Image (cartoon, rainbow, N blue to C red; front, side, top):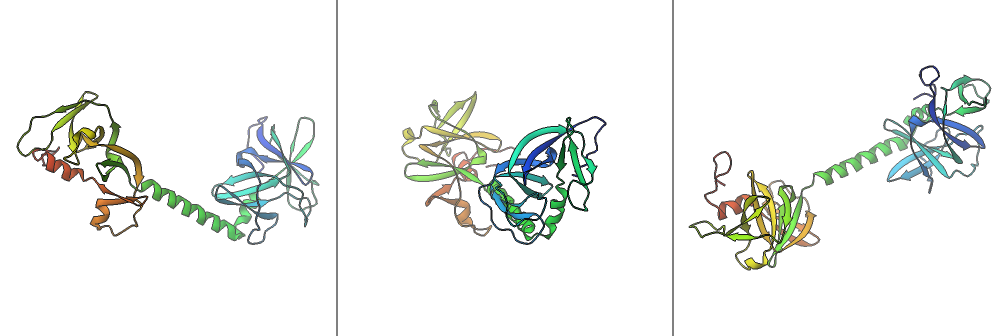
Length: 306
């Protein structure tokens, strides 16, 4: 965005004021992303006017520039950074001090502000004082010559891919029954409850379901992972499968975990049945098979058997 704004007559625009090289400047607030302290500054690759180094902010490399009246081999203390952003391009403006935000009429073209042939603009305050306007476009446009810009984009792309991978990686609710560790796909889990009444069911030939629980007015059949120590299985994991709600009886819930096993082939059956977390192996509960074994006459929506 240019320092010359297209605004209605009399309309004022917010400008962030700062001090650099013992002189006051202003930059359009619309191009400012944030203001931070400069903790460390590393040398920058490539050569370009006004670039003094690179700062890493939250794993993001930001090329730093400074406003100078004349070229200088030494810089005054520059403790603050005004982070400017336009699209994917980012520049850090190293400054001595941030003065605050004020509203000005759009910047006017001026001559004689500095000894340069480039056009200059300035903001005029109510007292007639001039504040030189900073045009960030020249730095954004100059970044094409910096190797850092491609590195910056590559780093951001890798970070986004890692975040996407983490987001799409399946998670599981880990639980125990006796000495065995199990895991159930967390996307199927609605809630885990304890202290709920369990009603026994009469035995029927071929049906292993022995009890039900009532949750929010719904009667849920209890699926068991072990035929022993029913009295210890006091926690119920409510899952939604085949459009029905079921309860998986368990003793302890260990929390939500992810599979830390090395990624294997898509057709690796062992990988589909077992996950690893912190060195422990959890058997992944196959709800399809569990329901088919314990309720062989269950007809799922669509008329198919489990």
